[in-house]
Image (tube, rainbow, N blue to C red; front, top):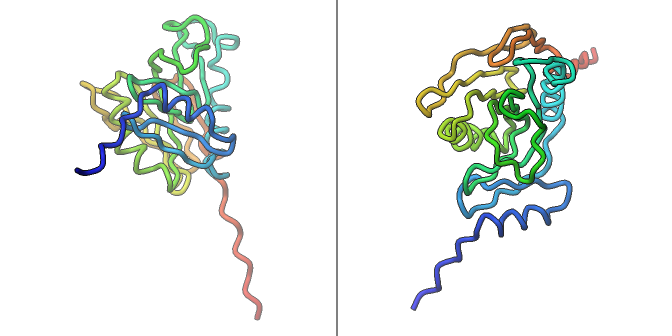
Length: 199
């Protein structure tokens, strides 16, 4: 007789395991029953997230009353059925959620998600998370790549992600779904100057 098949861990069991992780690690359930544990992001990743969050700061209900207001959450644990994603940023229109989401994990579907790509996450962000966001009904997804200094805007069409815009370097585009211009220059860490070679 062979070894018994490994037990399929439930969402609740995996969530409890995530909750026990030390602060320098984060966990997601990208596929049902499977836990992905990663170290916290590096400096280029953290900078892009912080600058994107800062650019969207004035969309908060305190500063933008009415239909243009958003709740922006950083690294919130969001449940998608039997999966758990921690998008770098997630946005909820105040017209859909008058109160800021305050559950754990969040079960309300975001209207927008942003993933900042890094060497350890880029493949799964594109191959697993982007199409799953679209299948789940997230209307908009931004993918930001600090290494090549590129921001891509994906819109969900018939449960599939469709690339509708991109911007790079020091552009100041007006990117959906937000009605404001965003200066991308602060998103990127400038390369270190090359030391002149000695004669």
